[in-house]
Length: 414
Picture 1 (cartoon, rainbow, N blue to C red):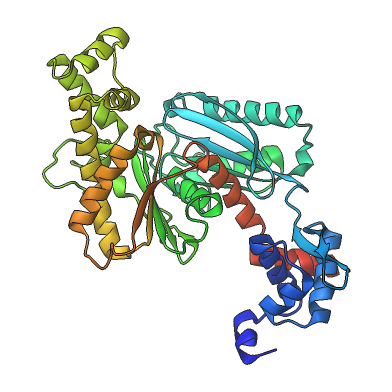
Picture 2 (spheres, rainbow, N blue to C red):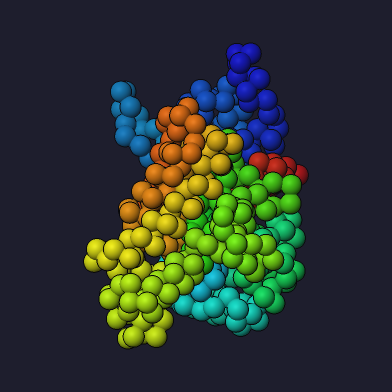
């Protein structure tokens, strides 16, 4: 083994087994020869640990094409179908629950429009009902659910899995969501804010798969940012990093539920767009928006997006104003953090390219030339599923962390 490989790998015993598993999980299928090459471990060490991982059901063999001498080479891959995970996406106005395999691939999901203001008792009972329906439909035993992840639209203390004074979630403060799920399903559960979960989903299966440093900006009822730094989600000291929804927008004075004025969320998110559209409709600034208000008695951000698709000029103005405000705040992140990618998701992102272009325009205007030289700004390609994928992936990443798998291997050896 070279000095470079020794320095890079640096594991022995159960830790080496855990590292081999991680490599297979992240970049497999791999042959045993390829694992030796990538780790610098000896053939005998790789053979011993891969055999153990196979016995534990963490990996499996698949046959590949014959090599030059006609022998079939068996590659090793993550045994992603040996169990299940659950991904729960709770938004301000919706709930989606997905049954996934152990690679966070969605098998099936159920959901509904429901206000988070309905409270934890009603919402969690709906979660339990959806999990029950999915497991019955797909004949999944409770003991095959290995982990549960959940995203919620507010600040979360990740270590305890409890929301902390969430501005748009009255009645949810310090509700023990982690304990509730763990006690009911007898498996590990992990709770985080929704934009962090979306960032994990984008890293796991979206545009961020091969990107080390990127930001996921979610625009819906609220606004937030999930930060991926050197390939890992960055939560900050207390788990609330990226809360750009409560960054003050210069010149704005509107009162935010958090108690401050001019927060980005209250002047540029979906409800702010809807509010401006209603004001314009009442003044007959747009006949299309006026007609929508007359017919429905209300206007949503989705209605604004539909009006934009029909080239309504007032809707175009409203969407652009929100995009520019978000872009102005995002430019500060670009100058500070220098990501190579910004992914925009959430319900409002479905308005489309004009909205994304408005954000991009302001980022380019206010960021330094070096910071934006190789910067991509795109809408999430998995926007409607990314939170469910991310919630399941968050649980899987925690369950199969290097330390946890090291302990699994150690206990299996004793």
